Image (cartoon, rainbow, N blue to C red; front, top):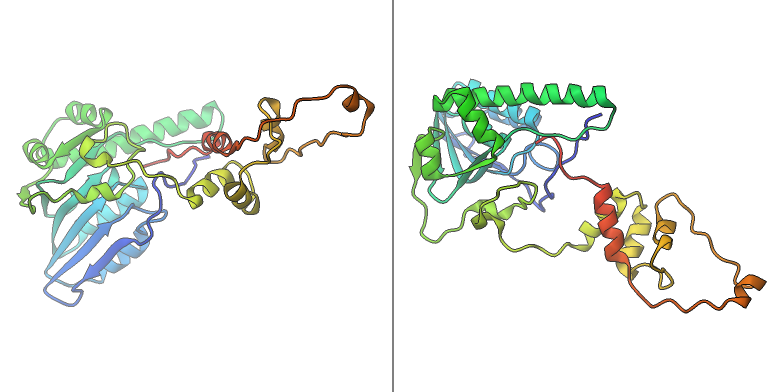
Length: 303
């Protein structure tokens, strides 16, 4: 079973929109992830096919997303009768780098980035399931490589090496390697819009795009706890008040594992009275539990 979940944090407001639908030149903004919390491929294809403008500008700032939804977006742009022009405004990473190449002309801001890598996923199942998924990833990677080869003219081995290495390209590098056609000048000192995304899911993110690590919000912590198996009510209570003060080091952390009922000792028994146990230190174990929850909630999915 393949796990279908976004590796990116949802944004408060989607950056997908279309401007000037009824004019000679329209603009489509792909400023979000593809699928999941972001841009629906079904809605995008419907919206794009409804445009009758002679020129359609596709402006991209996206960390990627679902390969199959991205492929649908790519084909819709590729098959459109109007002239299409891609503008990589901030980031075209993963499947959005493929989408960027669908247009008749590809332009890139001088301070933007383009990234290509091998597709990956997480599945749950036996050895046969894992082998089937590996075979599927090989096929998906091959079709993506073919798109890059067609645009750049490079051979398969060179493209696959670039994908395996998770290659991040500046505009100059992308132009030199044939991924784009034109570099567009940007305002001086303007940071690439890609910094709006949490790119920690990737291995080789350039320092310019890392930014400062954000402190997780209460909603983030609740999500981690729910992913670990706690109910929404339990998660809210733990985030608000911390774990019970009497939680001790050692095996009692397992007593709060979802689905396992904590055993209360009979403090009135003779055994309990004979041996006086030291009073546990008051200690908030929320951080430890959240770490445990994050381990139970993997965030790498087909992308």
